[in-house]
Length: 372
Image (cartoon, rainbow, N blue to C red; front, side, top):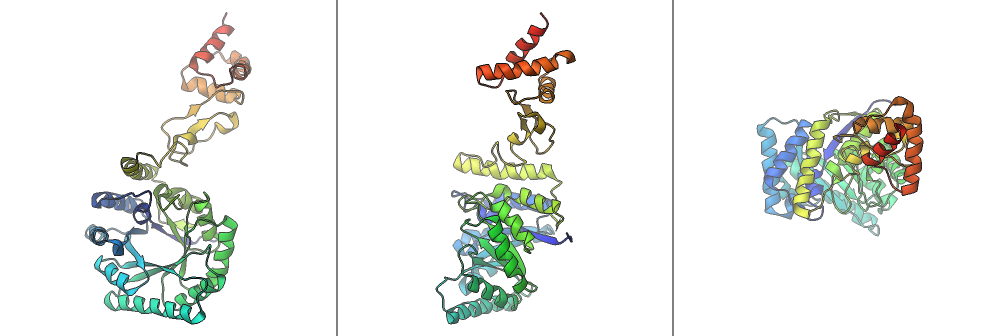
């Protein structure tokens, strides 16, 4: 596959504020922005200024911080696709204006045209005041919108110098093949406007859906740290980006800096835990959870993926000689090589008899039996 460049929007700050009532302080936002800059994220979607004056101040603080420190990351703000919200976004000092637009399926052709023309007037009013302005328009939502509305909007907006057109599965109801088919049909109508993919995780498929949207022709990836976001969240920043990179796409995000990623994820997790009393980086979190380095069946014990501090091995009826050997080594238990085959058989039998995994004491007793 020909290598193609993907732009990454990290929405941890904006989507994260929609997760179970999480509130990021200005200091926390600045720290998260620093993580994103270090990891070479392209765009930080920093907040929603029309919601409250504090959001205006927070986004403005991040914009000025990025300018002062000569960050490469761009700081974006989001609002509704209307002139009043546009004025508020201008106050935040951003150059990246992200709007969302919802058009009902029962809209008439004239109403659709009026809505799109109104959006163009809003965009032009911003351009008159900020010559560096860049625009992203999110059409809500691809899983429920009628095909003719999406096709009309994509074709129309691509003719009016909209930089990014986001096509989100806001309801999180689509399957990967549906996302692929929809994006594949809409991309040819976008001309030079880049299609952005934003998928929610209600059905547990946000990351898979996002990858398929990029494979279908999307060129902007929207994701967040640990997939934090509204309801069950959105695509995970690391795993989605790493998957696309492995598929041959070019990204700026430094997925090789796993230590910074781990620190970033655990920092966001610490904020969530402080405010909700639960973790989002759990034992089963891909790459960053401990379960990725736990093994039971021997054929899986050769992997070296993830950032868990140590591998753990559990011995039951499914174990093999190779895994038993690794268990003994990791637990500093001595066993002569000639006993390993018999020990493995005995471990299986004892596990079946007790209906549980065996621990150190159990293993040591079995080994001692060979020495009598």
